[in-house]
Image (cartoon, rainbow, N blue to C red; front, side):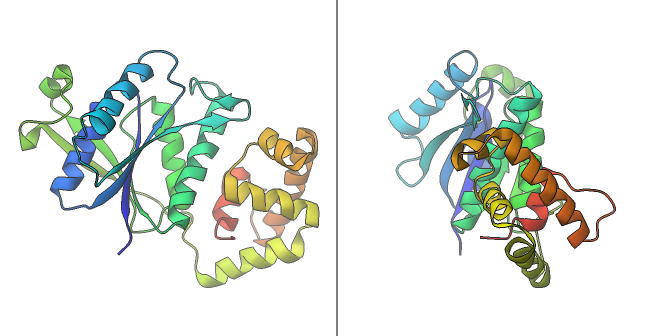
Amino acid sequence: MSEEILVATLGAEPQVVTLTLDILLSQGVRISRVVVVHTLPDREPVRSSLATLNREFLEQKTYGSGIIYTPYLLTGSTGPLNDISSPQQIDDAFHSLYTLLRHHKRAGYTVHLCIAGGRKTMALFAMAAAQIVFDINDRVWHLISAPSLVDSKQLHALLPDEAALIPIPVAHWGRMRSDDATRARLFIETVLTPAEREVVVLLIREGLSNSGLAARLGKSAKTIANQLSSVYIKLGEYFGLDNTPDRALLLVLLGSYS
């Protein structure tokens, strides 16, 4: 049986994390790790939310030593993200979370993803990443709480009906049959040029932006963009697609490659 982890997006309400964890534990889910996804804690409300969770998990040790607590700072091409509002920030945040989820899936974890915290844009890109990376054993959750519990700011519900988790359907775009995975491997290893293959493999493994790929490979962002444009055309032709695929569809079709 694989280890199960909770990955939760964080905004102004730290109780989203603890309430979700409490419900999962009450249902017999054996969570071994909690990963809290957040932006740069240099301003409110993220600063206070993260400080509250740090006290709960690290100082007061409410959950003992059986659950490892790990804050995860979203990063982009220019460093840590202090917000997720611009198109570039959303793109960077998506790839940062994609990398986190893919890392844990590759390590064999079953993931419970709570998207109730943070900006709505955070929930949207988290859902998109989950649909690429998750398999049928993973879950995406939304949390609903009684107004009185929300107003109280309590980290734990006193009554069982004060909070509930709602399962969110996941399309599982990334689930591939063995023959699809073979086609992905053959495409990468036989259709792409060595330079294109280098870019694609790094993109799949680390989910970097064009500027991030450029920095890692010692190329210009324009060169990376040109190489990916060529890959998209080849990918569409190879898989018989009606339209030229984009970055997200590349990850769906080729994400099984390791």
